[in-house]
Length: 338
Image (cartoon, rainbow, N blue to C red; front, side):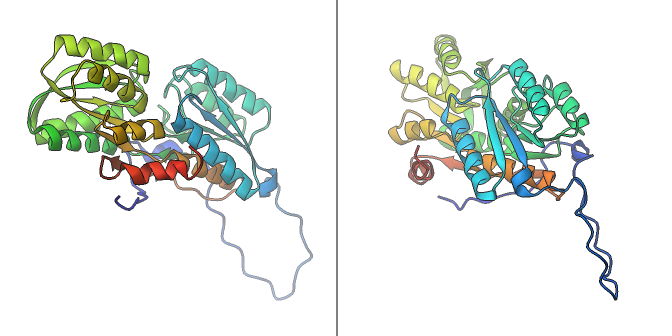
């Protein structure tokens, strides 16, 4: 397996989106010749033990978010900060996240680190939190408005889509019909993954995307979409599913129909999908690192609350899981009990 490389690079976001967050600490003045009397610590500077970070995830119904939760809680224990993890029951329930944000502000959290269920719909609540003195960090999915989040922590989803396209081309060649099962319409992360995939397909091949449909990150909806694809476009050579839940649902339908010839590629890197790569149901998966997203959400939250600098963008690494590399990636999950 290629060595995981943490990339700190500019995504397709404007750096101005992070204005108003913790500024660099001022340089200390030169020491006087005679020691002054001790002065009290500056107001607003917290000790780690006083810091409260809220982590708001999309759900805890798949291993990706469970890994992020586990990693966040472990990092909080290591750093000595208080962290509480919240999750909505449905990944598209942005109103549930809005309610949770408001509750976290009322409960006195210093920082809210959120995986937005809807990049735009949660912005007003996040802005209200900032106005109330609570810093906001976006995890996995960027917010839809500049100047709200202090930092983005997550994958470069355009690159992830590109990686999936490169694998498809390597397996089916440069001509023929392919399909895409997309996430939820108008979500930033979905747009980025689709853009990375479709742009690379157009630039590097004559493959044609003959079918695409939204399945809202759901295995059940993706299964129904795949049934329609098989009926309407039996010529399909490959399917890119923008999440692991969807690739699991779609691939099982195709395999049950005897279509072992179709190449399936997912994107997330959950242990569930990686095990489907191991058994051959899924051909490849672009694997993210939810553990690092959880860890850095807590670490950056602590630094913000303590008045320290953080990176405006932290890109976590991805690897392509195939039959040749998947065992090492599964081992990362199994090492922490999954």
